[in-house]
Image 1 (cartoon, rainbow, N blue to C red):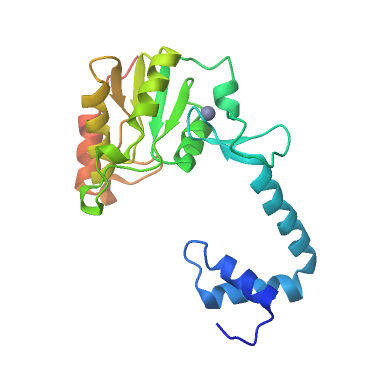
Image 2: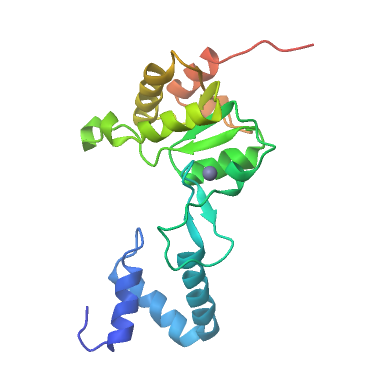
Length: 212
Ligand SMILES: [Zn+2]
């Protein structure tokens, strides 16, 4: 990066390059856009980032993003629960296991999950050196026991890593609770003609009876 940049601008550009997929050129473009064309956005963005840092934390029970009632400077001191874990209307017997928070949000948008969630944060991937000991199995175990979970709904993605993780969880917890796996198949509005053989095979394997 050019040493001619004022230090504050250099720091801003460096901060942007920490974001996924953002190189130095793009980071400089973002910074200049904010400083020249969108000066008002700079204040809004600064405030939003500061609020996020002081108010948002990871839910101690499920790994979802949770918001504190009041900004907390000593973030580690107060345990925080997300709105889903705090909602007493949720069915405590169902726990949906997802890989990441965005997946939790997607399942939640579907309205199909009445229970609570558990975010793994990662998937098994022996090639990348991620073995079972890297998964938060102790926390999941604790959550199952403390909430009286009866069904573990595995909603990891339909990938090699997602399937390996699902199988491992079934082996680990299958004797204590019912372990189910979300079906995968043809997307709504999708065309069978263009579906790949694995997806179509799974859709066939996951077929169910039609009522009526
Ligand atoms: Zn939670």
